[in-house]
Image (cartoon, rainbow, N blue to C red; front, side, top):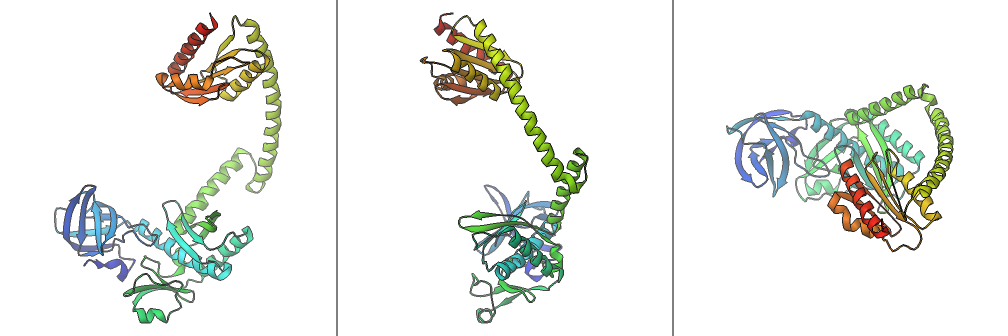
Length: 394
């Protein structure tokens, strides 16, 4: 049985040991160590990574009580030196301890039990037995949990028997009946847990609640601790500073400046829409006047799909025509019909698009498609024009 050094101390970073077994699987090389500080996946906490004789450890799993280390390749010697990726381990310690503290405060402040915990690469979450929390309640919860961090309460872990566990005020019942490991936050809680933790709440650094959302009748709270929370703050400050420079205003006045800018943009969009409508009316008259059959076709250099749709709708509303447009700006082709013509635009596209590497579709009255290259778009445009011209008798 492998000696679990992470239970002796979560702060062991380097150690020497011996390989007791190694073998190849379909997905890679695995080995078992006589002693390991590599924590395997479990309890919502990801595994540790690191190196064995400078060879990267890719995964650590617990199978039938045995800790398996997946490595990039086998070490040449049986006696090996191991080293944790400490930044990853300490991040997990901060977040797992932070989760315990957050869950304890959810129970105390919000009377909400924690249902599950997940620690991901980007953020951590807890699902709590509440349908909702107001912004004020979330703010109060965040302040309370950070107050407990600043009190620097001692965090200890130890094993107890089933009888000893029975007299402790546990926040939940243990999943095992012997060698029950308790993580105690001084004056806060006793929690059966096998994860790695900091030695005092001050090492969590801080907890920042990011957002809360409803999840299957419960509430999921997203949060970050420690260095992740600091990075989140720095990223936010970078965005704030960029916006401040962009709008040439102080950080405190950015919201007012953005509101003013938004109003200006809405006014400009209204004016632009009016100009586009006037231009479309002129262009529609020009295209109708210049047509020699029931097919109106045109190549645009930079007209967006939405604008082509609006123009096509204007044309087909006015008369019984077929409209074929292509835009070289984004390699889009549009086909529309007016009146009672038998052409089914969507079905035509579905039948022929694959031959030109196009993707799209639509209804009987209008269809649109996009193409990877301008050459494909123009080839489909010319094919469609030729096909429809033959029908129109050109």
